[in-house]
Image 1: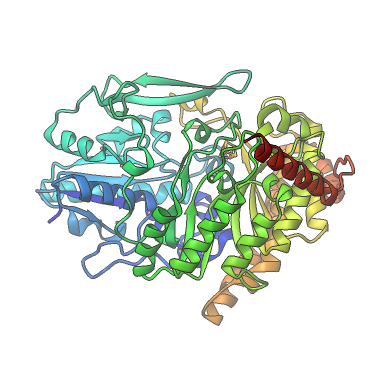
Image 2: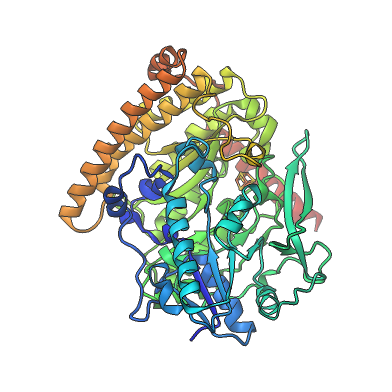
Length: 583
Ligand code: SF4
């Protein structure tokens, strides 16, 4: 019998036939993706053992499990969400649920559900889990506290009424690896130490110069909990972060926290940079390997910042390649790839992409997937909001942003990497010309038959949600150019679905045919519906979409990247020689 039950949003347990294009499916509206189709495409689900415990669990859940088992006196179990009822008894003290997007307010969900006008599958599944937990609590007379945490906790700040509806006692925010045992002990004993924890939550806003400002909002109702800014427990150092003790879904293993690139719309950048040494990463990879997972998926917001100590963000190639060598060589896994990275470092140092490809044995039938925030095709917007994304290169000096992106994309593909890009629509200062820069860039890369996907995300004013049930209407308020950009992104996804599903799908031939058919048909159906919908909503969209279908253009400075890399090399050698002489 467990005192503390850890579980997770069911959508985090789906493996979507291990096909990367499908991982966005939980964002899709329930109304447009019928349950049988969703349930099939979401397969397989993470497995459970005979008792109903999750054999594989999301990384964040495994971290909390490790911390509690190491530092608290309580019995802890990681329950598969499908079997949660089996674990809830009168004696249960805490039921803690990890979630990424409980209310469908994540940037991608907002695009799919048109800013909350539709209900996304992710919300549907989370809501059902909440109802099942509450029903079971009532049935057995369980007074356990229901606690929610994870990267989607912020959504409750915008819709706090959902805490009442779902009978959630606490929402926990932020990194807690080092103090979660204290928090859970104190919740159980009903004496939360307000010197360590704050009833409220941390907020990040950015000033007109893009500098982040951290603030704290107090919660008089005592439902939101975060680390007190003046707590004697500062954010955990790497040594304070426990190693997972049971395997994670997809072989997730953390390599670093923070990013350092300072994009002015991104909260990640406010987290201090901390790096796991390869030995610590290896420990987690070995835990996964013992659990039958033969790959490592590195948890990071920007892999190329791993062990970077250079203000120009020159990637630390030796450290990164050493990490991969350690994991593949001594971890004995057959594959490794990062969750997130950027583009410019591989333009400056292509050996990063090729070196990793060689270590993991990438090839025509073994690609390396990576998610990258491309954000825009516009130099102006890159310089205004995310200038460091282009480092160690400089936009306008070493090339246009589009030239840098195309060069990076070609290098990635040549080394068997397939980037899954996201772009942002609605950045401050965005004009039609910026949108056309992005349309031209996507079409140009597609015309070169490069392998990549682009998922558009709209910046939505979440403040509009307070006190209402819906946000602004994303699709209704698009300009014709923005509508055309969304169309172009999904047209490229259709191209990729047609090109890659059959080639990349692994496993049963019948499932391969079924999935290929569903995805190619689904992509064509979706694109056709989307075009009609955009044209109906916005009279100018039809003309813009027609123009976008043929708009293949990028701005250029005419950079010769091969020469540029030779110059960089000479400069680095000269600097190293000077350093040697002076020391
Ligand atoms: S590179 Fe990505 S993770 Fe880093 S600050 Fe920019 S958007 Fe955030």
